[in-house]
Image (tube, rainbow, N blue to C red):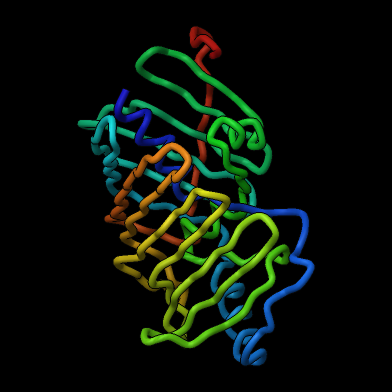
Length: 252
C-alpha cells in the first residue's frame, strides 16, 4: 500500500551510503586543516542531544506511484528511533530502528516483521548504519572516522568532502555556525541528493525542518523523490517509545 511504501522509502532514502570498515589507501590532501578540524568539532558538538521528536508530512513521487501521509519521528540518542505513519488520523504503519535491527508493524493487514539492519540493507542493495540515520535526520550532517575528509571553499560557503573505497559524500554548508545546504552521497551507480530547504535552530543546535531527497538508481534507471516537512520539532523533552506487537499479528 502507498503509505507503507512511503515509510520504507522515507527511511531508506535518508540512509543511502554508510559506514565502511576501510579508509582510502591514498587520502586526498586536506586543505586548511585548522578550519576543517574546527568545523568538524562544531558539528560534532551540535549533534549531541538526549531526545529528538518531530511531527509533519512526508510525500513521495516515483515511477509507479505517489502519495503523502502524516509522519511522527521519535529518537533517543544512540539508542532507538520510532517512525509512525498516519493517514486521516489513522495509524497505518509503525517502524522501530535500533543499532542492530528494524522491526515494523503493519496495522492494515495485522502483520509484523523484524530483520537485522544488515539484512534490511541487502534487500535495498545498500548498507545502512543506525548512527547515519540518526545524524542525517536530526542534524543534516554525518561524520565518521571511516572517511577521509577535505574542505573546499565554494560560492555559498564550504564543501566538506568525505572519501572511502566504497562511497563518497559531499556536504555543502555555510560556516559559523555550520548549517547544511545540501548533501550528495554516491555508492557505485546509486546517488542520493538531499537539499535542506529550511533549517531551524534550538539553543545553537541546527535541525533540518524541510528537506527534499532525490534517489537515482542508474542500474535500474529509476528515480524516487521524497519531501519531508516537519511542522514541530523538540529537543531533549521527555520521549516515550512504545512498540508492542499484538498477539494476533502474523509475522512476515
